[in-house]
Image 1 (cartoon, rainbow over the protein chains, first blue to last red):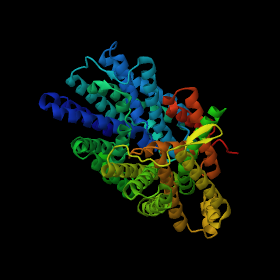
Image 2 (cartoon, helix red, strand yellow):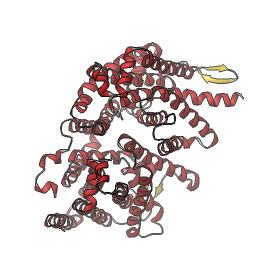
Image 3 (cartoon, each protein chain N blue to C red):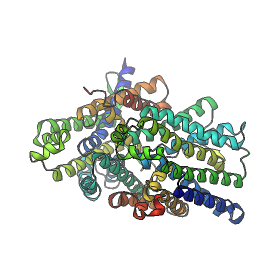
Length: 304
Length: 289
């Protein structure tokens, strides 16, 4: 472990400990705002871990998130919450590994579209399954855990995600991922098993998204495919990461906080105008600052 | 017999529209590596323009189709100029063009779709045009569907002929085969790229205009068509206009028969199943040699 990495991880842990006191300091409204921020920090970081490094644009975030949420929805009656959350992550990760083995040889637009289709496929399958076999559209989560428990769980996942991101970036595995992104054939020539690296990276990033979905599911009490597989979650994650700079560690984190605040405050009042602004911002950034805002600060602390 | 004919025809009618939607996108992607994920949004704009013209100014939707095409063509020129030209010029490789244009496409999707929501609201809109049934060979069809099918096929065939037999089409095909070679023999990218981009949007707009005669329209109607167009392109092969037509019709048939034998709520599952299956088994398209 290099000094730089140790420094980063200590900072992440310290921030996590500080944020752990928030439930007793903040009002309910502010706490739910903080929960949204944490959720997007974790989603954007886990997305960047794979897609930022490898340049494989994955739109499957909402699929993994939704799978996690449904693990909770189906399992919470028999399983304790503390077990449902990691199980959601593991199942989403396993699903990603399976799918990744089949589709990760596709590059560019094909991969992006296929991963988007994946979300829709899973959503429609679950809708159909629930309608035919369980005869319901959605599910009510009776007896959800307390808000403090949910907050602390999400905080834990977020801290773990960001710390894992930092650790991956400093490891051989992270270098291999970045090598795939820079030039896949060259990485292969240099002895990287790109296939295995890609599948592992994809599954790892899906694990966090799935665990997050499983943890957040109880917040809504009523779960239906349309709300947990909402493509907007996936899009907003990609937007946040790209705008912040998917190749940096801090970029997605900062941009997730900023955008979740904006999103919660503006989306209710000006939903359409807010999304238009988001779209415009993405276009302008891709055209004039393709590395994201984080690329402006390629200093010591951005690289970690 | 009449029933099967009706089922097949229903599939072909949907498939014709799919082909028309996919063709514009395929041209853009094949020529410029621009994966314009907001393609369906321009289809939606075409549908709303036609709806507006019909309900507010009482203009015949069929007569209005050329206007829609022209408006979207110039819209396409503007979009290309503002967004994609810079990407094409500043990107180091085609992979990067593809990735960046995909993201810009997402941005455009948000922008256009929400602008439409702001302007017209989220309600379903529609009008009735030629909704009477026509009987052909014992099968009954709504007249507007037949009309939409006829127009979609005619437009697709016209485009095929244009690509095959005109000097412009030759230039486009040359550019697809070898961008550098085409430039060496004097084909001007600075003209061809925006024109083809505009033509792609014009085709999308026309498809939207045709769809507005048949179905009710909403600002979010475009997205499924983008995905369907991508499936059709995958089926037919990238850059192949004839493959696109065949792929579109095929997908329409698969959906129609698949829904009949299984369940209407499985429609999306079916087309995604086809998509993933083709990508896995024949990533270069069904008709690739």
